[in-house]
Length: 385
Image (cartoon, rainbow, N blue to C red; front, side):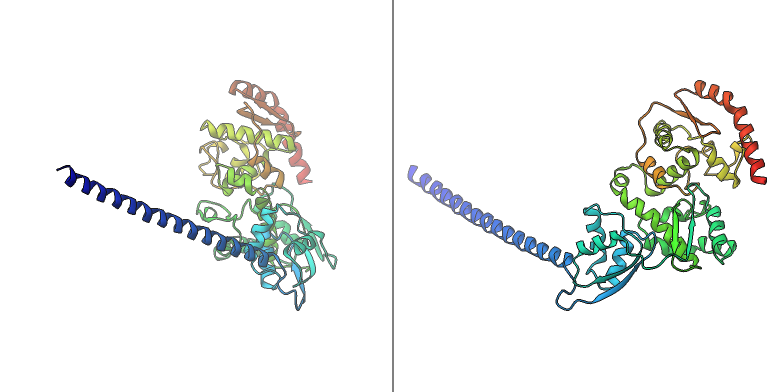
């Protein structure tokens, strides 16, 4: 009886030993396979990167004239270089520029060669080789409404204000821009938004080689300026709890409220505090924008306007930007200063007074209200003159 039991046990043991050997072989060969695949992928990636970063044609170099328009983003520059045959992949150029944290590309005309590496091209584009003086120069100030920007464009060119506004509000054109600029999303197509491109026309000095550039080229130069700033703050944008559209909306409020750089970050901190507490933002420039007129003083009646822009009636971030913010305001919207303040009052002379409680804020408001009325009246008289 004992012999019959022993035999099955031995058979079972030998079977398990045999299975273990098979498993070890499978694991061994699998590891070898994974190792070989890893080596192949590493070698492939190495040669791909080497090829992408190297010259397009070092054996038979060709000099190519390239024009980089004013306000071009890294993505647009990459597309231009790829189309001209100076880099193999424009998208790779954009990611490489971001990886190396490169910025400061200069608009202008360049003589580049197909035997240049990507690093050499980047260095050349940062030097700036403008071969002629611009024919047209104008400046868009920070914090202007889209309608104000249209007036400046019309005043500086042969285009009428109506023609400029027609392009700025053309739905097909706007949809085509969404495909060109990563910062533009479907958010701007909301039917309740007054102007889809409000907040995206970067305030800066613009130089054009053509004395009468097309409306589209001017618009795209401004969009390129905003795209460039967004790309510069890419890590902050990614870390933010808000979308690019919401960030630019906050930045536009900050731009309209603050005259000094240090106030931009404090005001941003106040806005974030109110949002975190689900308090309405209650900022007067949103009421002006809701009404479509620059108010010298916000009346109680004006506060009741039923508009998604009115932050006295609707909580949260407004439906869209209320002006075109500059770089400092965009940075402030992404980097609010930590503070306990929940209220601020902007004096007519540019000073901003901050308070933690409504009682303190109300006293401040009453104290400087007469000063504000007098100052705004004086400004209105100067404007009429």
